Length: 428
Image (cartoon, rainbow, N blue to C red):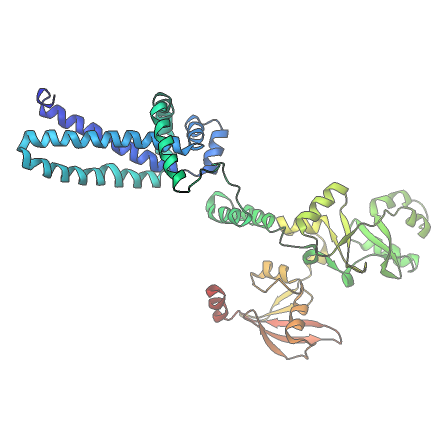
């Protein structure tokens, strides 16, 4: 048969076979390199090529069987054709040389180059290829099916069992990596928000609550003028109401309910009639769970209690939302400066400041696994309340005690982090 076809025709046919080999090799790499989540997204948007590719990748054994069938058929045909061409040109000795040249050409132009290109731009080749493979698979299905049965049988004898090829869900840490790798596709602000949402399960209400000694509320044992002053100066819409001590909670006052008393003489009994039942939550509750509970109960404020029922602080819906979107309150009390620059690389810091907030606002990296405030972290390290001028180093940050009182540290001076601490952390 080769004697009836001119040499130019044989070379042209060989060129076509090499192109087909490159197509099969490149399309295989492209289809297997597709990002499954991006593929599903495009398919849901109605992209025809993506939809076909997703369908075929649900049974990769059939797709691979089809590609290998076509690729091997093309390569073996090319090898036979080279033998005919070489024999026509130079006789028997030229066949060996032709085989060597074909090997190099297939390796470079039909394998390495198309597969590299496909790995770099998988969608550009995979979607058009899917439109070709889908009907081709229908036509060649009996042959592909027999091939898969034989190959799966061999794998079964080797102890390999086929598993469900459903898209596996991403873990939280994998999602964090996806968000980090998004780069310029997501603005830095939205990236921080997404990462904060993923971290809600790691953060508890203890990290964001207003501690016991800082709760602003109404003591019904105070005189009426003092109560009116607290209400008029309050920047909050809801205030805890108690007698003598915050642990003797009576209820929560929504300041909007006081509108009915605007034109009446203020009276404690009338105020008490406006109170709603306090909502208690146990300390250590993850923010993700508490956010759901606020939504279900239609509450916006909760009192945090320990295992003995003593109030440890108060947490609001606003506190949780600020963990996600950042500070958005206009409360003047929140504008008080906890950190004041004291030098080129030193800062005067209120020791009562929350460690998480300091890390976020100053880009520091104090440990948040233990105490919630800088005062607690220092006391935990020293196991005593230090005197002024005491110096120590925590997490690589040099700290000098500036001011203390009988039971707590008031202010400290924090210096720049030791570079050796950074290297030690990176090595871990």
